[in-house]
Length: 275
Image (cartoon, rainbow, N blue to C red; front, side):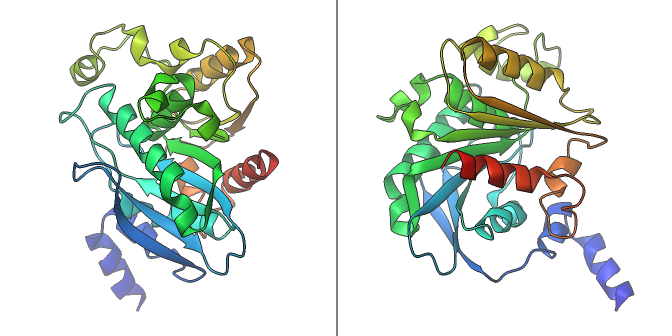
């Protein structure tokens, strides 16, 4: 049996293998809601069983350098928080080279607008929406709360966001040298593409989490964002998990790996404290 399982895992993508570890009970997954006309503008909703009142909502954007990712790969994220009594939305968004900045953030705003307008029908409370993301997805989530114009384009404002959770996010990574990112963000030193440069007043509460062993997105991004938020009196909590890398921090949300960090507990506590 062990040999058979090993052979199966060797043929699966890492995310598909991780999904095998995720319990399928205690929640329902409602798939394929369109928040726009593009095939990438879709989201899935995870609803806990037995809800008796509208629940807090957690909208999640995955990472992938704005060049890859699929919402179906994040079953573990949906289960991690649906099992804590939250309604969870996992959104796809358009990627480079189909779009450049700010196209993927505009999609994040569109996803949030859809959630705000429809989540009550699925058991969620539109007055308690939290926005989260990992890596590039953390950029999307934090930029939504940093620049009000994205939500204004959908008839909304920052009051739609009860709180933000950025996981290993790049918030200030200038100057850039990689040609792909130079093209994606319209130049080597375009400050308009960085969340830290859009904070010019008080913003929604944020939890910024990172790992001390992250070799992909340096902790300086989190430090810069924290400093800027504090300049304007915005509530911000920072968690740095010792010895944790860029992927390990997200893996710590998966059943069987949750002892790696306290991220899940920290996120649940943050959401409850601001609900």
